[in-house]
Image (cartoon, rainbow, N blue to C red; front, top):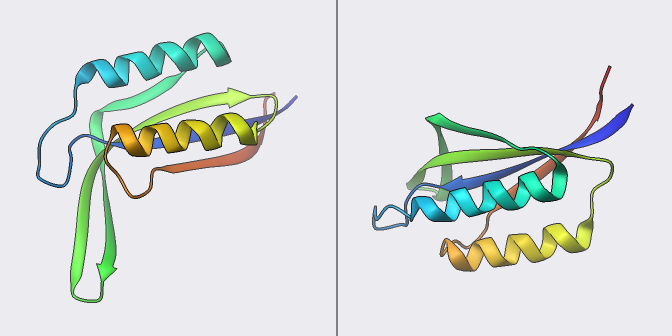
Length: 104
């Protein structure tokens, strides 16, 4: 059975180090659970993302990853969600990526 695995990467804090409300993550978990029938949240040991914003400046984020499986990638839903999350989490860009997978 072919599916799509979709991962959403969210920061734990803003650029000043202020933590975001836990309620935001809980609400997103509930939304994903209702829409996709389940969600996996990697939160116990947050991952660290590093990237070069400028040649001399590296940015570091601690992230939580939300992972869902769907029958297909709904571009309209994910585009709207990405825009909403970028505003809510005050980010220039939120990473959402998808992979075709096969469930056995």
